[in-house]
Image (cartoon, rainbow, N blue to C red; front, side):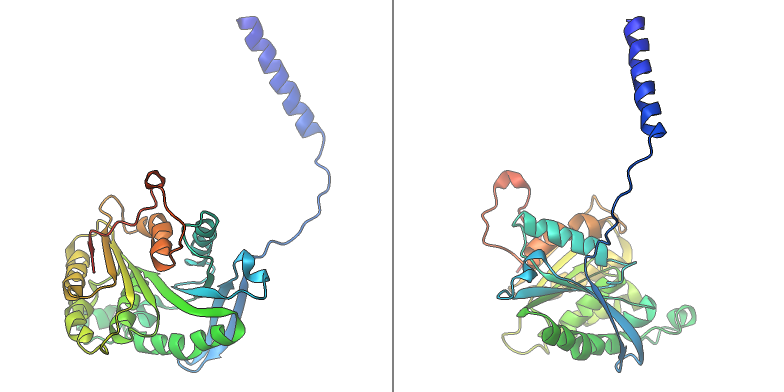
Length: 290
């Protein structure tokens, strides 16, 4: 046994020494591209902004059009990359449709994703807060029209965000429900401003036009406190509506839920006709739904 062990070590050592003694052959280097970045001056925000665009593989077919997923906090150093990756895998599995992914980069999240507040403590800590209306205008009047005229879109779209971006998605759903076909908010920061947005939810829904009922997906990690209380308020306000799904994810944390939930969220936002076997784990679970 000792002899065999020594022989094995000698073989490994020999292989290792040969591997390091011979330098690798020179390789051709090619850049890998997964999308495009577009920068322009936003009239709504009064400064230059950037959006990132991923086109699915079959976009090369000039006869095809695609739905669009808008990602808030969609910078290259934010959530764009992991959403693109999960979207690509979902389409390979036929779990969700191929989509154009549009990442809308944010610069100051506390400023751009929060509604105006009169809370002196918040204003002292975040004096720049309160520009979510301008960011929503940027999205509605600049980003969406640019995508519509620049790419082959089929008219179906959705928006997704997590944390403060999730709260922004909830606000967009409440204030402009017809802007998107579907909305997804992951662990939205509904604690903000003493749950002000959550407290307004029922009243804002009463202002929606008759028949306006876009799909809404809500999920929350094991947050507790005002985060959970705010979510509970929104869920109660949704009762009586048809197109929504709420899934608490108690085994997850605020910093893990987005990545772990993305495949399921995309399946809800952009479903396919592909039959799903029960053992695949692809079944959409809604603890509460419309």
